[in-house]
Length: 226
Length: 226
Image (cartoon, rainbow over all chains, first blue to last red):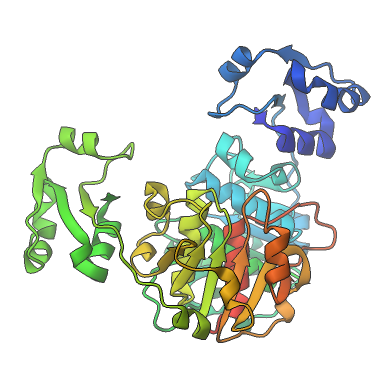
């Protein structure tokens, strides 16, 4: 279920076949009628009591939609030629959604996820992706094995003790590995990577780490050609 | 109130006089006894039922503390010689806390906030700052007037239509203006700024914007000397 004008609009724009059912307040129907009828979608008109029963938000927006599950097919060739992210056991749906949004901004099309990551259909993940969930493809490691990419593309692992990311040049194809909020990347993945990279902190700073979505943004801004 | 080992530890390390009362489970007392007694703090030993009544988290951590309000005195001279942030009407406590954490990473000591921003004592803001709230000073615009800094330091405003941030050099002293999640910066502040800057997106990207905390991180990583 996706909630709100922004997300419903993004879903309809990116692939209207994803949208199964639309629920809308009568008062908002006029704004949406033309668009929905053009896409042959007959909305369910509901009242505000029904809306608040359906919605998961404290302030329900006037439009909701039920979407089909994404059914992206995995293409390892596309990984080898482009910049992709790999997320290891990210537990915070807001961080995951924000990383999806950031990937979309930098033109990253694929995010690889370990099984321990937040589910792609988590409502907070979808909300914080701000519509980017309809453009960036997520795959969980039941359909890929990260080790298979070793030697075929450059793997960068983000950690606290790597080389300065600002000394790296932008690159056409690589996988950027990012670890969980509390534990970072496990030894095994640090060993798998070709290079360990770090966002350097001010010498006198006592902060222990950056938020993973912020680190992802800074690393992408440096490695991805815009 | 601050919750959890990380935050209580950061509070005790940064300024133990801030900490008024400590509440702890008996089972965790042994780990903390030496530290607390060194600081002359007598903890309240509580049971898990009392803990869950006090805690605002679904999984209460074994230690909580009540802190005094910060009482930082505003020093406009410090603003003129260093890099500071100004936040306009940021409504999301997670974003505010993450920006505080990022500022701390880059050695930024002061964040100026409009009155419309999240309150400094919001529990989610404190939690997501990961202890940086005890090192970075926040001031709301009842104690300063942003216009007074005009001409005395460089003001950068983040917006979608500015010059490429990656073409800017790092700088010793400036104020970086960041706008609200939904509306960005108002016209008045864009006009006040010396330069409007943008994190460029990939030419074909359909994303509308970056999360404000991610944008802040990328901008700081470029402007601040590390």
